[in-house]
Image: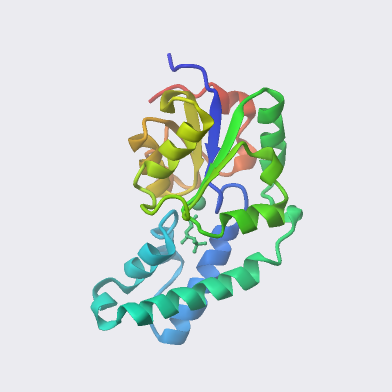
Length: 220
Ligand code: BG6
Ligand code: MG
């Protein structure tokens, strides 16, 4: 039997809001312009990776054809485009069930963190107006190694003052599920089994995740 859950650590992009789609659209626009092959399937592998690691993954063997300055410029253009999309968001862009789940967890006295590889997490949370519902935010500005490195989740647990075994993570990325497991945490995967199959439980969307089930998640 697992220890009782004291904290839930949410990934942001693709879990609380559909910014995963906006990240995809920005990469697709830029790669089309540059004539570099890219599509939705290749994009799946980028979930949870930092901006720089995403670009390296897209370029693959072609990486050495670009200078560090050129890569920084590509990453800057991608981010400008992403922000032009993301900064139009409103609280209505919270995914169905996300606000209700956050409020229910707070009502039960469960601590809540967001742990994201993104360096735009704070701006996105502000657009969604859910910053006051969180006890802790750890993002790509705090932690240099992005998922699957467990550091972002361990840092969130440490700041919450909760041992990893008493934290449950909610993630939509294969890299995020791996990071949560490496941190010694239970994890609910949001999305298809091909992507989040290593999670302790799999749900199609956050709307399908009742607070009771989340808090009573046994270890695999
Ligand atoms: C993660 C997303 O949350 O943040 C990735 O899943 C994204 O797709 C990464 O690349 C970095 O985001 P940003 O906003 O710093 O470019
Ligand atoms: Mg995500």
